[in-house]
Image 1 (cartoon, rainbow, N blue to C red):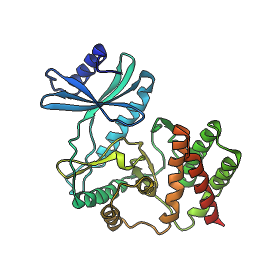
Image 2: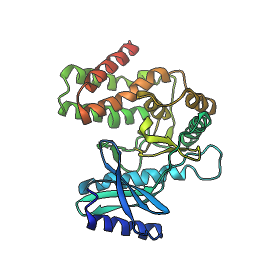
Image 3: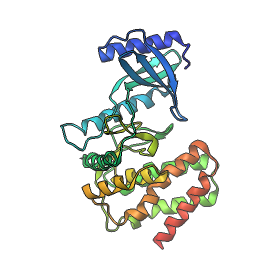
Image 4: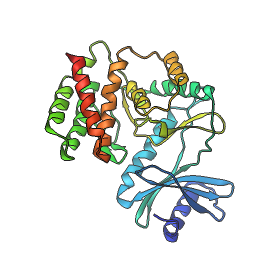
Length: 305
């Protein structure tokens, strides 16, 4: 969608007004960097600002799931606890013209300091303590633009085998992955029990896609997280994602570990969890991610021998 789609933007402005209860005075929008999946915009009406993402009309369910994920994380932050995460509140979701959209609270981003990263570590550990009896979620969502099945399972190993590794390996086969990588990936999936002989994770509320582009420090100094792929799973999966591309400080990890100590087996399992994201990057973008996935699979199989 472009800035010149006047009818579509008028419909979005109206929806924001109806859902927020606030009048937009002479609103206008401007494009901002929003990643490779969606177009991103700031709607500005003087004192009021909103962040809007748009995509094709057939991507509406992706935005509905994102809205529900944001609300799930917001509910985990109730109370005035000092270790809080700021999560942008969704305002409205819908279709305007040929585009789907989600509008949410605008975040004023600052620079922060080491105390901000300490708060982020403690607050993430606190969010992870929200749990359910089963792994998964009440609905499917997306990881990037890839479908992410969240069928509930009582066993974390079974959930990860079927709905994370198995699902991505099947997609990789359709996207041209070589037979050796797929066969060894399947063998790894069948042998997952070996990574959990002395470790039983609880079903923690996860952000699900926690890389450095999906957190920020606000001008207030408080940490914020956004763009979730929410489900309930092993908290180590969130921590592993923070390490995949870097961008999280030593203060963050120290604070998290102090709030909720990390099991020693995490050093190996983090590679298992990041394999999911590496395979997803291959399925989305191709290129060298297949070689990285093959190397990770081989290293994990070696750990089991």
